[in-house]
Amino acid sequence: MTPRTPLSASRAHLVRAAAFAAFTALTATAHAAPDVASTSDVSRWQVAVNFHQPDGQATSFQTSTFQDAVAITGRSTDGIGWIANTANGSNFGSVGNWTFFVFRQEFDLTGYDASTAELRFQWAGDDSGQGFADRGTWVPKFRLNGGSFQSSVWPGGFTYGFSDPVTVSSGFVAGRNVIDFYVEGNGVTDGFAMKPLSFTAAPVPEASSLALAVAGLAVLGGLARRRSAPC
Image (cartoon, rainbow, N blue to C red; front, side, top):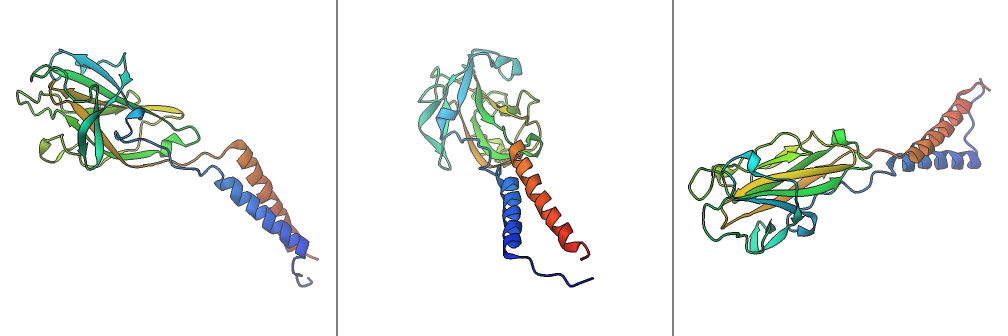
């Protein structure tokens, strides 16, 4: 067997071009991470409201009629604005007029593998559901894509500050997703705040990108076989 000779300049250029094409194709869909907005971006949120229903009951919430959420004037936690259905976060001006909110955000996982999605966030709701006369008995909960209710942990049980970090890693679907937060207010101090911490998901390469990657790898494979073939 004769010694291998170095690649010609033209062949070396072809190798580099094929490698670059394969790498570019495989990373072409690694675009920005999926996006969920905090409540500071009130334009991304809607709210469904129900009034004068039994305290503490899941059936007291309604999800048939949504409206644009409203930023509560002057209220924030750790720099994150609160939202409700009114700018002052009040509906009746007297305690015990239970108000049932479903705060909703839609987000899109088109182009991502939904099975790899992971969302981390903290959130707060008013009221806390501690059973006091002015706090009701419903502890705030959330659900993803109409799944089961999920609870969170708040230091001391007071939901007016942010919860411990919440991690959601299942229940996502391809395309449109919906996350709902269920909060019961007392009719005077009502509202909700949410702070995303991270949101990740693996991108799904497009068919054209995969075809380009396969072509580039095929070129590299062919050149490798030619170099290893006996002379």
